[in-house]
Structures are given as structure tokens and as C-alpha cells.
Image (cartoon, rainbow, N blue to C red; front, side, top):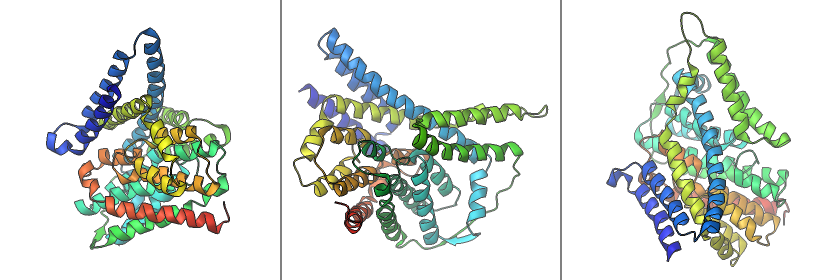
Length: 416
């Protein structure tokens, strides 16, 4: 009965997110409240000091994961806030793209940019940079929503092909179930899924976009900080692959360099306070992450994820993998993947590749299913849980195309 109540709290949190525009309560506030309430209930029902100590240990593990994500988000969002404020991203866009481009062509350009950026760096950074790219264009609401949803799908798709792109890919790789070369094969299915979605979104999307010139000049420190940002992205990948350095540590190092650049380059005429850009970070996004991850941690605590993992093992792997990906749109894919790995299903290498694609991309089906989706909702004010739902049919088709292509590619490569 108690576990049913906790599951009810999680469902209630989901409903509050879905009907945010109806109840007029910010989703970050409801998610945080219900997430904290669920853990309070766990402590109350712990049944003595021993049980409370165990719950406290699990809460600390959950908070450590959340703190790592918070610090990482804060670092990346501060960089992006600075580059946006200085017009660096907008100017780079105008140098890469022609002065006038059709909306359909732009759709494909943004899709491939997000896809390949997310393959070489983490999903959070790829999402922030890609959304900054979208925001640089003067798009009508319908086109902007489609591009934001496409960015979410493309970022999650690109992340499955390399261990630096997605945590679940790294987890499956470290488990010894797939090799680096086999993961690289997922780039093709990922690209096919993204192309399928871009084609669907391009239907009835006429018009052209004119790029307005951005006024302003860049100081040496602006260029240096931009170089620091992209160097940090590259270093994050290299240090993680060769030395096992957590991405958050590399990004915090890059952020500290950014602050030092601001401090050392100030003049008597102008005091440069780069630290102030932390205030531009949208803390609603961080609070939303906190609430959602507390709820997911609670579901893991009461055994819901483990139950799902055992349920998964009862079905044919290719069908079960497809459904597991869809389920990851409701539950965070990291603990879900951890639960599946703990259950130890007897899968062939080709089936592990299919699972890697599914849990990495399936979260795109709902706005709350991935970090990219949650960031998109916070950065694009027109994008809500409800407005994202209209894209579910197209997203499901694209996800299915990519999933089937994964099975086909594995078979063509002779992977059993």
C-alpha cells in the first residue's frame, strides 16, 4: 500500500507537468515538492534507526548524482550565457549559414549539427549550443517548436554512437557487451532516424529565413573565452576516454579558466565581472532536474525499476528493447539501464546494440524523457509538455526507423 502511494506521487508529478498550463504552477516547483515529499515518506516509514540509515545512504547516493549534474549544467550554462550575451553564437551562425536560407534546408542543417555535435561531446552541451543556434533565427512559433523537438531527438541520437555522448552507452560499453567499433556503427541508424524526422517535420513548412547582421565587436577576451569553451568540450571527451576523468571536473576546470581570463583582462575603465553570468543560469531548469531525479531515485528505491527489468527479461529481446526505449521516456534512462544491467539478460551483441540505441533515443518520445528535452522546455518558452506531445507520432516513426536500421546494420556487419 505504501509503495502504491509513492508511485501515485510520481504519477501526480507527471500530471502536474502535463497540465502545467492548466494549473498555472511551475513544473519545477511541483516536481521538487513531490520529489522531496516522496523521500520524506521513505524516512517516516523506514522502521527504525537501521532502516533510516539505509534510506539515508541511498539518498546520499542520489544527491551525489544530482549534484554532479547540477555542477555540470551550471558550468555549461554559464559558458553559453556569456557567448549568447556577447552575440558570439549568433555571429558564428551567420558566418556558417548563407544570408538567406529556406526553412526546410535550415531544418536539416540544424539536425545534422546537433547530431554530430552530440556524438563528440555530452548531450547537455550539445543541446545548449544547438538551442542557441535555433534561437539565433527569427522563426515563427511552429517552425521553432519543430526545430527544438528535432534538436532533442538529434542530440539523443548522436549520443549513442560514442561513449562520450551518452551515459547509458558508456555503461553498456564498460559492461563489456559492445566494443568501440561496434558502437560507431550506430551513427548510421542514428542519422537515418534524424533524417526521417526532418523529412516529416519539413512537410508543410514553407518560407525562408533571412539572417540579420549582428552589430557589435568582440574583444580579445570574448574570443579567448569562446576558445576556452570549445577546448573544454574537446578536453572533456579526451580526458574521459584516456584518463577516466569525470566530465563535470573538466568542465569546472574550464569554467575556472573562464573566470581567470575575466579577472586578468580587466582594465581601469571597465570592471569585467564574468562571474555575474552565473546569475543568468535558469535555476528553474536545475530545480526541475532535482525534482525529477529525486522521484526517479525514489522509484528505484521501492523496486519499480528492478521490477521493470525482470519484466523485460520475459520477452523476445528485440521487442523488449524497443519497449524499454519507450519506457525510458517516462523514467530516466540511466537508472533504467542500470536495472537492466543488474538483471543480466542473456543477449547477443546485436541485441545489446539495439538496447543501446533504444535507451539512448527512446527518451526523446516525451519532453521529460531526457536531459535534452528538459533543457529544451526551459530554453524555448513556447515548448511545453503539451506542445511537445503533438510531435509524438513523428518521433515514434523516426525512433522506429532508427531502431530497425540498428538491427539491419548489425546483421549487415555480421554481428551476432
